[in-house]
Amino acid sequence: MYSFTNDYNETAHPKLLESLLTKAKQKNSGYGLDDYCQLASEQIRQVIGSPKSAVHFLPGGTMTNLTFISHVLRPYQAVIAANTGHIAVHETGAIEATGHKVITAQGIDAKLTPELIKPILDEHCDEHMVQPKLVYISNTTEMGTIYRKQELQRLYQFCQQHNLYLYLDGARLAMALTAEDNDLTFQDLAQLTDAFYIGGTKVGAFAGEALIINNLTLNQDFRFTMKQKGAMMAKSWILGLQFLTLMQDDLYLQLGDHSNKMAKALQTIFSEHGFTFNIRPQTNQLFINIPNRLVDNIMQNYSVYAFGQPDSGHTCLRFCTSWATTLDDIERFKSFLKKLSQK
Ligand SMILES: Cc1ncc(COP(=O)(O)O)c(C=O)c1O
Image (cartoon, rainbow, N blue to C red; front, top):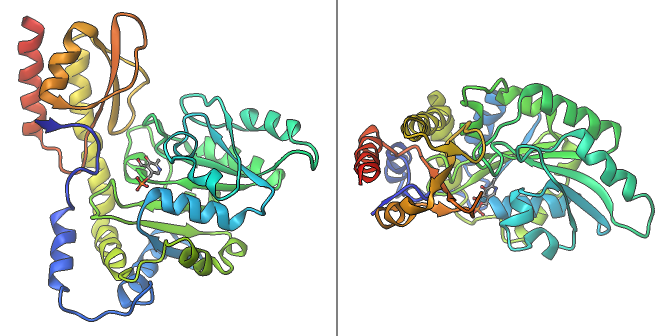
């Protein structure tokens, strides 16, 4: 059965596997102190135009979120996220397990705005409540939408005015930065966040995320927290080498762009059949309202996520494309859907 379930169900992009194979017998220093982590950090600092930013390589997204967030917050401080935010919904309470409350606001298109954050600050006004200190957003968001530059500028300005940190989860940053509607650059992210991460797991890496800390006061002793949380891999050089390859010749953005283009082709097919979308597609995740009578047949032939029922006649299915999706895969789905609709 072909899978449109997610963008991390293939092993790794051949260029990354090739680089790992070439270096298979080489001896490397451990725990991120190897040449590849150093070179990849340098490369990332160049790409984001921020020579002073600190770069750390961690094995996965949840690990990156909980390690960074728990590092910067004092014991009584809390993080604000959209109600759909990954840390609020899909991380098994990982942030709360570090002792920090996640306060949610009903996002607009899964995004936060200053207007949504302000009432939370007003409500949390004294020491009988937790103190909101960090704003968590992701780009792309959990629903595949993206932040425009002006939205990020407003958020960062608001955070600075209210003594809050802004942290951006970039598990799918490649897809966000190559979306048709995007006007943000890597350089903007270095200027407009206290920290963000460049996600590798969903963009062709075997595994790994590159955390970039722009506000260096937050970097103090970060490696101690990494090690204590189990986020510092002995073989970190595997992550460094992958990021070195990903960040060379724009491979990272090319893979994001490819994922988006495959999703666009799928979107066209669904639109031609008159299907509607639960949220306007912007990147590589499509949330499609499928008539109930077709759902079983689709799910028997294609692996996808079911996302509840927008109304009594439809089920929302998520189709996710990746760096490895091919036009042939899309064409096969097109023929399948055509036959299904004629039944
Ligand atoms: C936005 C976002 N952040 C974090 C994660 C967590 O990543 P991991 O599964 O590597 O812990 C995901 C995974 O789907 C995600 O979509």
